[in-house]
Length: 294
Image (cartoon, rainbow, N blue to C red):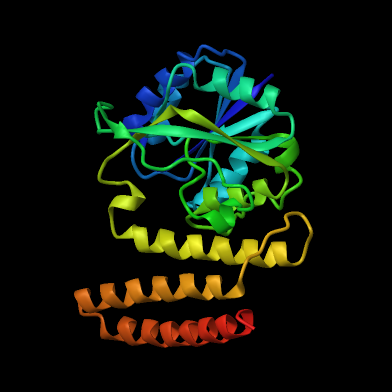
């Protein structure tokens, strides 16, 4: 059963060799690797070309301009030929048995649309720091959308049959692309959780979660949540109770954080802009909470 490892790269050439070595060391050997470079400004393309030279299991594609994460990951999935697919960031690595365990889990769970696992947090030189704090089963009566961010983590894989039933990866999404996809996939089948670390998440200064881009990531995650709510409210794919007030509560939290950041940076225009959005979201939250309590 062919497993397609999908790698969307942007300026992570310096880390690619370790990523490559973790792939070719896999105990399971029926795989292919789709790499799409999003018009990197470092020497990523040269490093990747040199590293994978002569190995037909790797295919490298290049965007002719910077198109963003959603577009690039969509292209990765579109070029894949495997029955199972999973994303691997070029600055991270897989444990040696990651594919073997994932493929086995998919064979045992034919109705599973997405299978996730635990991960290790490692330093820039791949030294173990700790087991990642996220990753879990979804409690009965809940979904990834209602249970909350963090339950679905690396290493995650999904069946192509489930993926093609979704709207696919949103090419317009700049961040939170994986979260948006996970919401779509759980609408197509079961989720299975593997309680073992199969992935090494490397901590370094360019990680989105470690710099000012974290607020942008939160914004796009909120967009993914709102899109999932709209999609599910119009279909019977997944029956669950999603109070409308919850969406506005998340907006209130997000705008409050942006107000604080604007104050800390002295950006008065942004502060007033997000204050208006905050009060609007707070009013709608209150109105919906009143309706839902009746």
